[in-house]
Amino acid sequence: MNSTDIAAQVGNWLRDGMLSGNPLAILAAAVLVPLGAIFGSTTL
Image: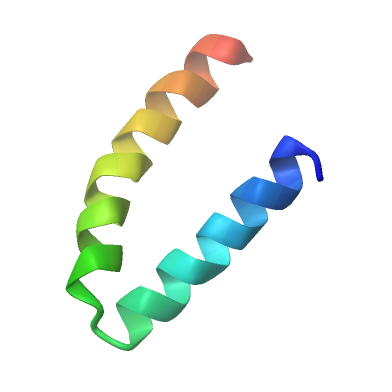
């Protein structure tokens, strides 16, 4: 399982969680999205 598979799994979980109003998923997205943007921009 490579990193893109893991990212896809996490993305699916976050999307499903936000659609169902899961506060943990919303909190995780609030933390992970800015981090992902930072790491994504630095690794490219």
